[in-house]
Amino acid sequence: MARPLHRCSLAALPWTRDESFTPRHVSSLQTPAFLVDLPTLKLNCQTMIERCTRAGVNLRPHMKTAKTWEAGFYMTNETRRRITVSTVGEASFFAEGGFDDILLAFPMTKNKLKPVAELMQQLEQVHIVVDSKEAVKAIKDFDGKLPVGRKWSVLVIVDVGYGRLGVPIADSAGILELIRDMVDCENIQFSGLYTHTGQAYDARESGQVQKLLSQTVESISDLAKTIRASGIDCPIVSIGSTPTCSVAKNDLGAVTEIHPGNYIFYDWEQRLIGSCTESEIACTVQVTVMSHYPSKGHMVIDSGWTGMSLDKDKNETGFGAVVRETDLELFSMSQEVGKVRSKSGSLNYEKYPIGSSLWLYPYHSCATAYHHPSYFICDGEMVIDEWIPHRGW
Image: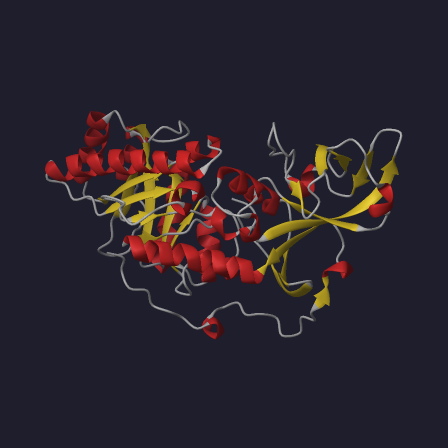
């Protein structure tokens, strides 16, 4: 069962809303601007929290999408406990913001051990992951200082078919050998299994994602049982990806936690997969129409790949989708310029005068958000706050 959550007051955080911030209409913003609809974001967070409660698993949300303290506050149900990060810099940033129980979800290497050990001096729980004997040896040989009575909490990354990182799940013997190597080490505590079901992004309907989730739950549960049958405790079994976690039901086998991240914003790709509806996409990029080119059949906007990212759907919608304008397509981008055309072949330039605004759902919100130095937090058409994300590694 999921552990109880301990709430903290927003006023007790080291960061609070700037009371001098003056709400303003979105039309006053310089473009391109990354807009976040706060009511939708809060609903996405609460929906995932409730899904975990029903399934009896912990939620360890991934911070790599939004990278802000404010987002983390809502994603952790106001607890600032139990999060996933993708860089040492993110871990330090969230530790500074009062977050604890942090899992660094990238294979550990020797050069990263010292800064992580320093984090352990200020945090109650830090977890790292490995996928090789070389990484385990580097941890074993670490000669720096750890908190008194603490060991490295280490999980093994398991590849369940995505092919990006991890020991292939079919190699159960190799996984057990790696775990036994850690169990015999004085400064390591084997803490469990971690996997990312990224192959779900190849799906185009929720039924395919549900099938993948069932397969993953079955295979990772079998592996956990094998480990426990060998006499080794396996307290954490963590699976992730927003598509699989968005369709998760109540029976998750031996899984103890999930670690999605994109769900806080969602995006057009998630909508195509079936992870969310259009109304659940919490982010848009506001752009301005700069020029008309009737002879070429398109108009130009002031956002290229630096405002949208180069992620795209090759067959259906290009680089995202234009909000409430189903006939428009962002089909080409350079660094600061995008080209928009009519899918039907007849663009009504009078409907989109030069200087007017368009709003785009990004195809991939994680990559798009990273291009923006701040997020404009909206309630309807009013900007009510501004969040500054972490940048760097």
